[in-house]
Image (cartoon, rainbow, N blue to C red; front, side):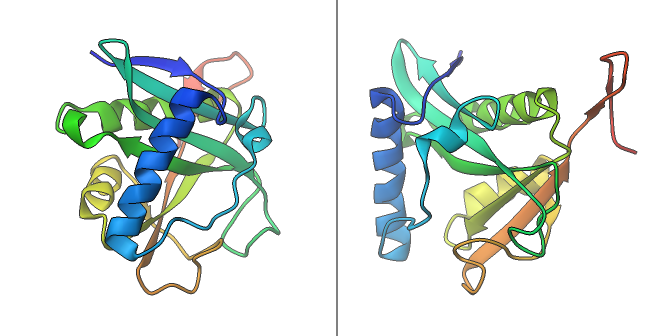
Length: 171
């Protein structure tokens, strides 16, 4: 079972997992992800970051940061961008990535976001498969890698909160 805990982006456990995912990017793409991330962007209410623990050890992570229309043509007010989704290699195949993604979706919807957006790469077929099977659809490019032929972009509408506080699925 994965114990998901909201965690600051600059917490040592988050930093360790982010360093691991950066090494994966080096192996697959020849360099680290150069997207600038400010820890403040992932602090509530503007963002969220979570670390997943298995047997007390940090093994998975992911976060989102708020985005707005005007930052890029493909972005809208109410968007939140998923960043640094990762599961340690020894812990893959247990549904941890799906659990982290579900928690990111839940937290973003609870914060009032209408849609999650993300960028991943063609050398991460397992990530593309996860997003596609979780209801994410292709969208236009945005951000640091918008001109990269190896980048793929996805979006998923999130449930919205009615005035009563009840979650309503987008139709």
